Image 1: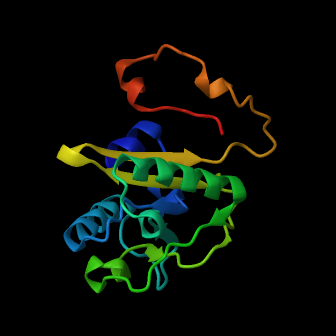
Image 2: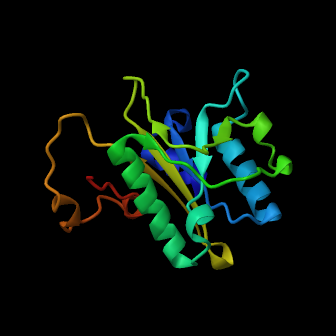
Length: 171
């Protein structure tokens, strides 16, 4: 799901400024998720990590399908308010391999500073029962663009069958 999301959207994973992970707190699952994210985002470049990672489950628990909805809401709010949100984390499992990754656990809210090279983008990773996985990429709207809040709800026929898997929503 992750690789396909970037290939189909044409977005470079290096342009992602926040990752909302599935992050259940189960060692095997979290280690598998970080390994998969590293395959897409690569290893750490330089001494310091640069991509904040978090999970809303640290705040609300794992409420099955509602956790995915909460992750989308949390990430959309982060983009809207231009804030890197905190994750409740007393201790990070050392076996996750974060020290070799571009990720760090964001433990406090801070301004989301972004270069002019591309808009703020965030990724949401979700795993489901039976191997149903999803990876969403959210992007802030262009600066100064006035959007019709109802425009994303209009029905449009997809250009191709593959287009059904990529949804462009205006925020």
